Image 1 (spheres, one colour):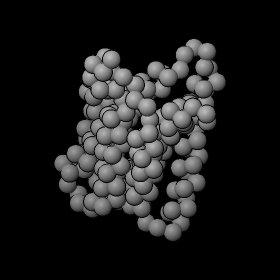
Image 2 (spheres, one colour):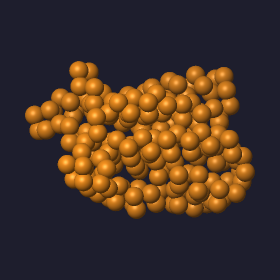
Image 3 (spheres, helix red, strand yellow):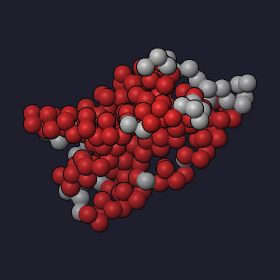
Image 4 (cartoon, helix red, strand yellow):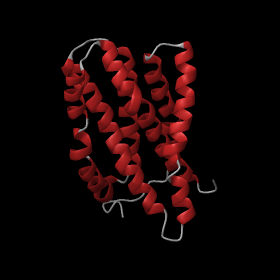
Length: 190
């Protein structure tokens, strides 16, 4: 808690894991079924959706290390994820192209956050910081528990699309907090 940069990057990790717990694991499939897609169509959409993890993470890591650092790219990734996640709650069309592009964009943001969060965090710690590393890894279970409780409360009162709006809103204070993150310097900035 004393290390503000570590706390901020933990919150970034928590927001990504919250996104994974709610949007990725459970409610996107339910939303697509609700719109009227079959499981075979959902399989096609998901195949397209996951491409950013393969094509973006390595180049983004290089860009962060050599050109601009992680902070700016993290903020861009979180904005992309938040906006595209909110859009999931707004779109009711059964157009496979629109949904493929939309879910592709959610994963562009998530892939960006995932690789840069890890890159930033491991630049801040060393081998003596095992307690900090162990704490950092609690983001996934904490987000899973928190996400489950939140989703039950939301769905008791609101319709399914509200899950996506809440997830997007969860990113807003963390995006603001990330502006205070001390950027690691790239090779070009040194």
